[in-house]
Length: 477
Image (cartoon, rainbow, N blue to C red; front, side):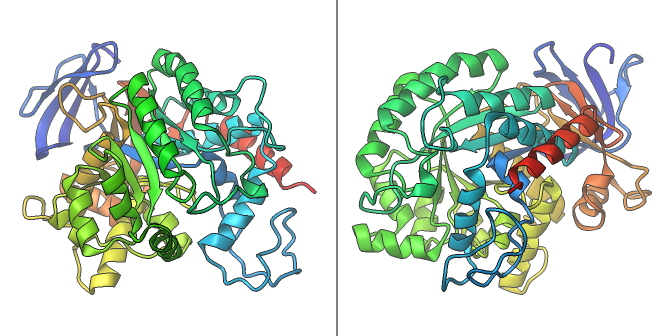
């Protein structure tokens, strides 16, 4: 491409759809001009269809992509469906998030650094093909299978950084602080031995990772796993320590995902999880409240007011039977939000928007819930809001097609059967609601560099083969 310039007949800007848009960026991949009503430069590349902002994926556990699809059965205690190490649910249990977590722990116990890198490399290439241009990696696997630190304590985090670099996806690394197995300081269980760190150890890890992230253009933050896994004093000290390293770094936390978590928090503290967090931590716009599914009316109002992003993961929340976020209440209070693929049962930016919308339709028995007065097209409204909230959660300048933001964008295929002959806004709507969703993506650019062309990443075949081999190795007896 010549002169770092792209011309699009239609582009989705933060203010809405615009015609004849010229995008120009500098050598660092930062947009320096976004001009509507422009003439086409003679030496500019031309988008094959509508140009939309790349979607930030605000919540990922990369290794779980190799585990996706392997727990979709109801196993009686003692009866195996033929999956080594993953065959039994706890005796007497009902299948739920908690029984799924037990199986996930068994899978995680087998993972090594090379397998982590190969799984993540494929996943990140897959994300790019599916319209994500950056990802927040909530990384809680720290130690070897026996719970001992690697010789290089950052081994598994470095594997993820290499994977992101190979795929060319924007990256926010969120090492996870995990210390207890429940409220009130319950000791960790055997399945959590690879996650456990002292607060001091976590801060040393962050100090060591920061120059590596800076050199790669990645953002470094912190993820206190949850209130049940991080005691109050550890949360306080970890946030203070992070502030000393980088006072603007993003902070992500799982919260109020399950009713049992809410009940246990009330039994421990007398407060619901989000209410407790807002009273005891300096929650503001740098925080991402992942899931936040089970809040009461006061929590919705207070959490939105503080500026935190709600990290919604609709396909994972559906897969785990978590419940439905009250989207209308959150938006009523002006809350920011974004989407993540979390456990990667589905890796598809448009699919998350579709699942979010359809879940709300089922809950409210209404249609077009995601539309706004400013943007009556559901797909347009949801895309713009998810990009803004997702960018906030990444801690990076990836908030859409505007000067000063990174040149991350997705070009839809105007020749795709589901899109042919439609207006740009209807093309996006058909991409979300009427196509195979990834099939209507033609090209994806990150920081002004093409990563996907004709719907396919350059490393698709080699990364896929390495992923399959890694998964097969993990599932061996």
